[in-house]
Figure 1 (cartoon, rainbow, N blue to C red):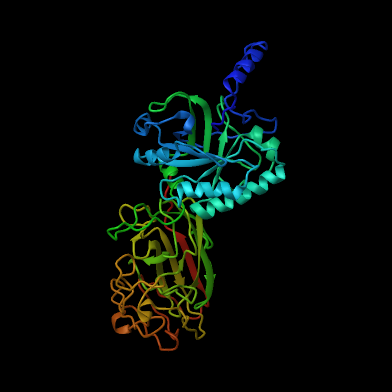
Figure 2: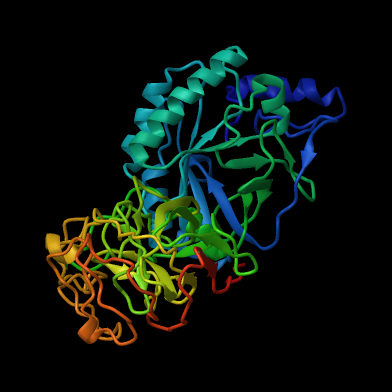
Length: 503
């Protein structure tokens, strides 16, 4: 990337004199091949791009405020060449952040050196990466005299250690000419690619990749604030998408004032297991149907175990369709582990139809319990009315009960994350009553929360105490729709209300 041939001045003069005999050829400024093979795949940017640079101590001291003013939005600085430390990295790392640039770091990977030692240098230099930090990159340009199998094995060792130490899976920088001839592996195809290919309109990709995140398109750019030539790069996307790409990793530490972490929570619809509104799903009353919805993290903050699918309209509404797969009666599912920005997560839960026939509308949103709803101002959705289940339940004629094992937050005194029910960051509805839902009174002693018919207008009969409720008669519930007994089916028309376009 920034590696120069190292030769003494006397040797250099001899070499230059020798080269002049062959028509004045110039010394190459680096060693990675940037040509392509006949089988190379050329991939252009998908749309908007963001301009960036990458630097090392060859550029000397950089005035990062001038770089930012020149229209550069991201920069990547070298940590080391193997175990040989870059003398400008510390100043570059802090300077990029101070100037408001999305920042990144790379290490020129030496396949012949110990990969764990090289990874330790990376982790020591950058620590746990946070929002605004790109994944660390392995600069792959040389074999170090090693075989392809050894290069792959050592790079895997390095990548695992870097991910564990920094909190983000690393990116791979390479050129098709080097990778395909000296590595020839698809083992890293799931890692982000930073491709080097100069003097072309669109880059050729190395074996294993079908897209690129960053393209180094020139090694001889000129940018205010940087002396001499500098590498020029493009990010494949908008500035917002770049910031999202840089937002993954470990959760940022809470601010000293005890407020919410700095960043944005966001979710975007990807898919769902049940049909959209054009196709209905048939089931018996009290029947259980497995369901899931997949969402993408489009915020700048990672999701964790407090990121939950939650009932809305109103928020924290006690659902009639909760069962033992739910966390509580208003939280169908939560994240297991961490979901970095740009990644997706499948929320899995059950729809357990209630024993009482009628027309039901279920709405869901996403909440970081104790912090914020994703639909709050300043966050990035989805809106409270975006994920909708329009459910029509018909009595089967057989006696059935609600799931007696579903936990009730009011009964246990706090949510599944150990937060008290009075927490106003998304758990305010975990109390002994369900306000704003037609005045229904909740029995905190019931695992399900039984409905009191005296405050539930539209019910034909009060639920019986046989596990929460019983289907002894048909009724109309909420946005009521009467049904005839004995039809034996529940019609569940569950859909997302709408999709939102995103650049």
